[in-house]
Amino acid sequence: MLHAATRASSSSRIVALLLLLLVAAPAALLAAPSGGINPLVGTWSGAGRITYTDGSNEGINCSAYYTGGGSDLRMAIQCRSDKNPIHIRSRLRVDGARVTGTWEERTFNASGSATGRLSSGRMTLKVSGSGFNGTMTVSFGGSSHSVTITTSGIAMSKATMRFNKR
Image 1 (cartoon, rainbow, N blue to C red):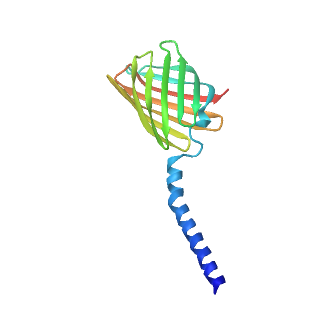
Image 2: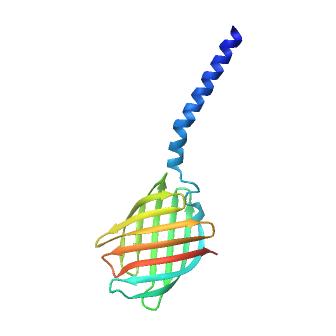
C-alpha cells in the first residue's frame, strides 16, 4: 500500500511538472526570439540603392557596424553615393520580442524614436521624429543580412541594402 502511494505521489509530481512546462514554454519562446540580435553583432559590408522623393535613385556602397548584444544593440550604417551619403545611427533595447530606442539619419537631419518587434531573423522598426516617419526592416541570418528603410518627410524616400559579414 505504501508503494502505491509513493507511485501516485511521483505521478502527481510528473503531471505538475509537465503542466508547468506547458505553461512556461510558450511564454519563454515569445520572450526570447531564437538567436536574438546576437547574429548581427560585427562588421558588415555591402551595397544597395537609395531612392529620393523626386523619383531619382542611385547605387550606394555601405558598411555597417553592430555592437552590443543580448538586450542592447548599437547600429551604425554608412553608405556612400555620388549625390548623398547615408549615416544611420541607432541605440536599441530589446526586451523579449519588443524593441525600443532612438534612431537618426544624419545627412537628412532626421532623428527620433524607434519602436518595433524582433522575431526569429527579423527586426521591424517604426521610426518617427519631428517632421518625418518611416520603417526600417532588418532581415538576418548566417553571414548576410538586408536592410530596407522607407521614410516620408525627408528627401530620402527609400533605401535598400544587402550586407555580408567581413
